Length: 82
Image 1 (cartoon, rainbow, N blue to C red):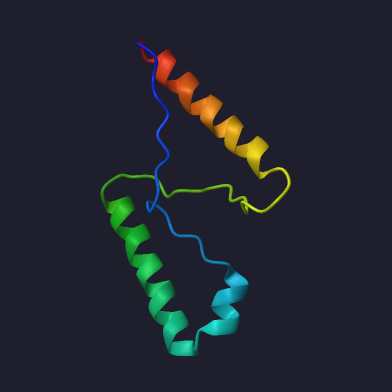
Image 2 (image 1 turned 120 degrees about the horizontal axis):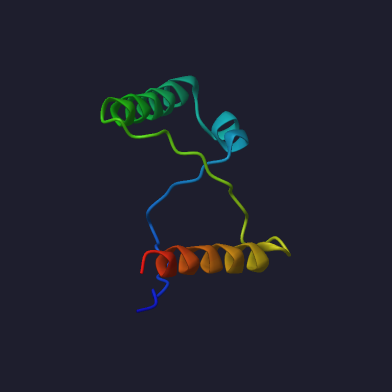
């Protein structure tokens, strides 16, 4: 049986560092950084790896190519498990 690709929405948050610097005051920056640190510590305590991602803005001319490559890779993972 072949895998069906599903787009997952609302599962990740991406924030530009420049936006953090520009729009948050020092207290808000500390709260955000402490929250990120806590999540990382909790993941490590559960023996989970820290995630590392490639991020592509959808308005880039190559975004569709990147998306299709991701879909193909996910579909291949699904078919390899059969």
